[in-house]
Length: 398
Image 1 (cartoon, rainbow, N blue to C red):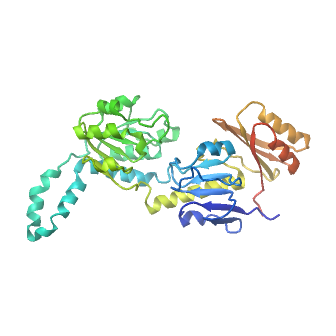
Image 2 (image 1 turned 45 degrees about the vertical axis):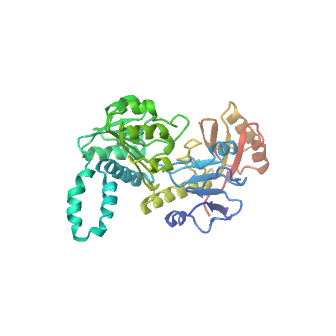
Image 3 (image 1 turned 60 degrees about the vertical axis):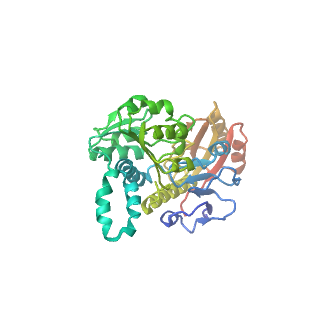
C-alpha cells in the first residue's frame, strides 16, 4: 500500500539540516502549502492566524512558544512541540558574555575609544589616560544567582563554577535530569528572596507565564545587594521594567543586560541592550530544526510525542503482529477509555497493546490492533462526547 503523503508548512526560514530529514517521497514542504498536516515556525506570530483544520501539530524551532496560540491548539487537539536544549549552549555562551559585559564596561570603553580615531598619534596616550573610567570587578570570587535550572540554567551554573564563582540556584520545579547534570558545587536556595539577598549577579532562565510575569519588581529589587547586576536573556516580561529603571537610576542596581530591548531601556545609561541573539548561531539553528523535524516525523508517522508543551510524553513501540494504530485525543474525563475500547470490541477488533497518558485537560491514547479498524468505527469513536480527534496511523513500512 502506498504510504500517505504529509504536507508541512514552514512559517519562517528553517535550517536545511532539519528540512533535509523529510523524505521527499512522503513529505511536501513549502511556505505556502495548503492544508498542511503540520507547521514549523520560529518567530512568526500565529496568534490571530487562521489555522487550517488539517493541522495536527505545530513545532516551534526554539524553546519559547509565546507566539503560538496554545489554548486554541488545546481545544482543537493540535499538539504543540518545542525544542528545549537545542539552543542551550548558544544562550549559555551569550549569558556568560553578558555577565562580563555587566562587569567590565567593555561596550562603553569600545564606544569611547571609537571617538578617538581623529587623534592620530595621540590615541595611545588618550587610551591609557582614559581607561580608568571603565574599570569593573572580576567575576571570580563573586556569587551568581541562577533563577531557573532548566537546560540553559544548568549549563550557565556549571560554567560559572568553572570561572571561579560561587553559584546559588533556585528552581522549585527542577527536573531529575537537570539535577543529575548540575554541578555539586552549586548551592540550592529554597526561596527566591534567599537567593536575591546573597548574590552579586543574577541571571534569569525561566519561561514567561502568568506566575512569572513581573517576577522581579521593586519589592524584590530592594532585597538585592546594592550594586548587584542582573542579566535577562529569557523574557523581558519577567522583570517590571519601570521598577528596574528606577533601581538602575538610583544605583541600587549597577547594571542590567538584556536582549529584550525597549526605548526606555535604551535611554537608561546603566542598561545594556543587545539584539535578540540568544539562539542566533548556525549550530543552534541547526540543532533546533533537527529536533523539531524529528518530533514532527515521529508524531505524524508513529503518534509519538516528546517535548510537547500541551500534551503528555507518549510512545508505544510498534510490533509486526499489530500493524494498525489508532490515535485518540480526548478530554481528561472519566470512562473515555472504556467507551473507546467497547466500540472496538463490538467490531471484533482486538487490542494488542495500548497506552494512555494525560496532561492538564488533555488525554492521549495510542492503540495498536491486530485487525484493520473500519472507518465507520473510527467515526463512531470520534462522535463520543469528549473525544477531540481520531487518527489512523499507517504502518510506515512500504
